Length: 131
Image (tube, rainbow, N blue to C red; front, side):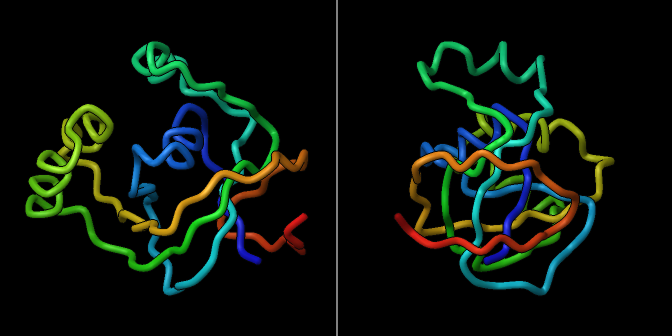
């Protein structure tokens, strides 16, 4: 199964259902099930912003599963949609209008029992069997 490595706190925000888009500078044609890997990298500024949410933020493990249903270009129209959807979570993308990126739209998000494994760049493969 495909896996994407995401910095904390963003990986946890996805599996907790608060973040439905993951942002990258590259686009993907892949659609389908994807595992969410919480990387060892931590965005300290974002951690402070979300520390009051009461979540745990594990690192170096796969923590969730989702379905990647679309990859959209983040233009002005998309930024307005994100503001309407959840400006608190998407503030960093909304503020950086010069940042040309893509949003990987995720649905059917669920937490899974953490699987310790090192992450990789891009989309990578892992032989996932639900326990």
